[in-house]
Each structure stands twice: as C-alpha cells, then as structure tokens.
Length: 200
Image 1 (cartoon, rainbow, N blue to C red):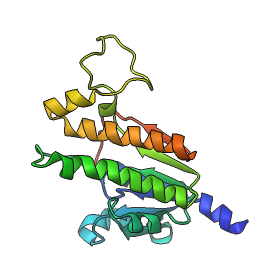
Image 2 (image 1 turned 60 degrees about the vertical axis):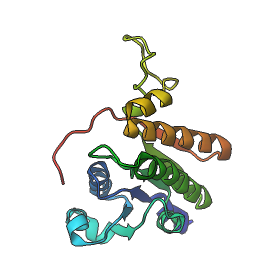
Image 3 (image 1 turned 30 degrees about the horizontal axis):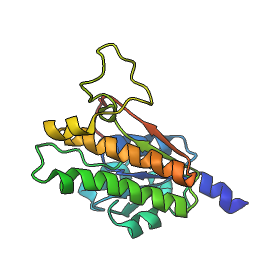
Image 4 (image 1 turned 180 degrees about the vertical axis):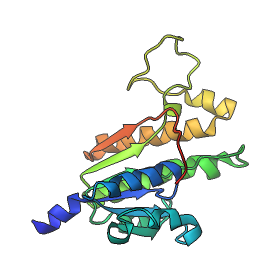
C-alpha cells in the first residue's frame, strides 16, 4: 500500500519549463504534498534554473529531458505517477514554414504518446491543457452562442485561415477525448482563453 500512496502523490507536468507549466509546478510544490516529475527539452540551467529555485524543488522536483514525440522518454517520466498534467504543446511565435511538422504533429502525436504512456503506467487521471482556441474558431456560430462541450473550432476554417495553433489544439483535444472513450483512461481537458501574469 505504501507504493500506491506515494504514486498518488507523484504527478508529472509535461512542458514544465513553459509559462503555464512553470506556474503549475510552483503551485504543486507549494502545497508540500506532491513530488513533481517535470519534462523539459533542455536540462541546462538557462532553461531550468527558475524551476530549481522554487521552494521545495530540491526535495520534490525531478526534471527529465523528454520530448513528447519520443514515446520512450515520456513513458519513463510518467512511470510511478498518479496524475499527469499534459501542458507541452507548440505555440508558434511566427507563421510556421511547415505547420504540419512544426505545430500539428507535435501537438497531436505528442498527446497520443502521453496518453498511451499514461494508460500503460496506469495513471489515475490526465489533465490535458487545451485552449479556447479549440472551441471558438468557428464562423458558423451565432454571435450570442453559448460555447460548451459540443462547440468545436472548425478545422477547415482554421486550415484556410492559417490558424495553426487553433487547429493543433482542436485536433489534440479531440484525440485526447477519443482515446479516453476507447480505453477508459480518466482524461479531463481545460480550455483557458488567455493566460496572463508575471514570468517565473
């Protein structure tokens, strides 16, 4: 039973070095209850120093160099975790030269890898950080429409207008929910509209 208790108190945050991921790691550590496995693309201090400086990081933060497109590295990171926050996803600063490779594949295949690894590791719950961009980009919606779980961004509209981030979030969230339906994995999604605040 002791192994199970420690598992429920260990959580993984993919994309731990990013804006949302960093704040999530800080919040989890601040409770004093959780050990956090954080995935980063680069373990160097320039990319992880702000995480290592967080209260509780010395005792309860383990950073892993992992790429969500590399299943083995993801599987290793989520092993022993009771919960996973899947935050990692490309956010293009400029117009991507090859959106399929730079934005869509990492979002969708990365989500598939995380979910498959979580299912194999018997993770209790996966929280997928999606976006309001997966919900609201649909010119067919009436202006006063209530956007709920049945509202999705129009994939064709996103492609023709070059809204690659919105398309990536739409495809990845659809994939996450379909995977949950197929396997029984406990998956929930959150769709923040805008995230503001100081950088860590």
